Length: 194
Image (cartoon, rainbow, N blue to C red; front, top):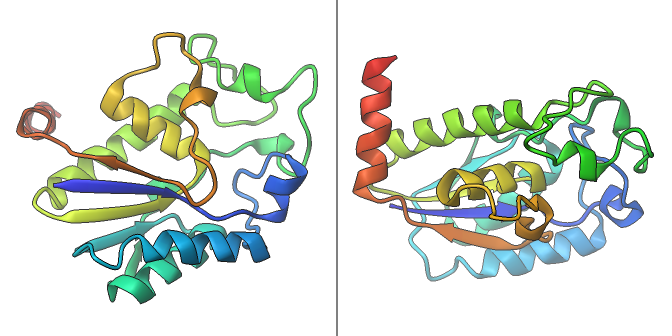
């Protein structure tokens, strides 16, 4: 199995450097160009499945990958971006900012933002299901920065310095993962215990 994680192309909110979260913001012109360039990287890869966040910026990005691969995207709710609650559309504030919201240990529950440990648990459950369902496939996941960070930690654990910004994907960037049999067996045994 191989998993390719793509962060959607650029939006105007990315340019403004404001919290985007679940606001349904489309790609801008640069984002479309990034999505096209990202899609081209899949022209020689036999992709089996494309799973995509329900938000338009991810679906627009997935559309270009679909055109290159001939695989129709499937919406996967578990890949939706972290909710940034009251901060969506706004810049960092002293009392509520990205540094605080990425602090895994403090797990802030402020400004109606989805706490980071809740995000990680949601994404972990989603990844377990994807790996079990598609464990012999090449799977593309088109998603968001926060979800991509959680996916990276799912496979690699938290960074030693716990700096989640250091593992963030850029717009249009791809990261590859290769789930091994040991992980698949672990997921299966956890499913049986539930």
